[in-house]
Length: 82
Image (cartoon, rainbow, N blue to C red; front, side, top):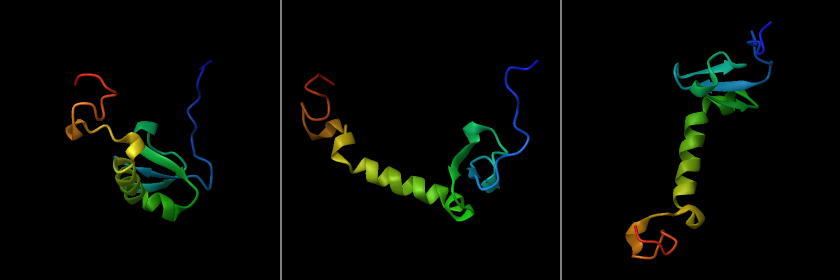
């Protein structure tokens, strides 16, 4: 008896974007490492890459996550030597 059963088909209404194939899938068809989601709609899944790029830009400019050490000796290192 197998401990983990492979789900043959995804749930209707779960949408994913497959990074390997560059396509939208209803239910997980490809392995988890190759997909983004789940998304509520096919349209949201189709724009997964744009959504990720927008979020990356937001995070890069967020001062709470800015760890750029080019601003000076104590900036971004928590007072430690780089």
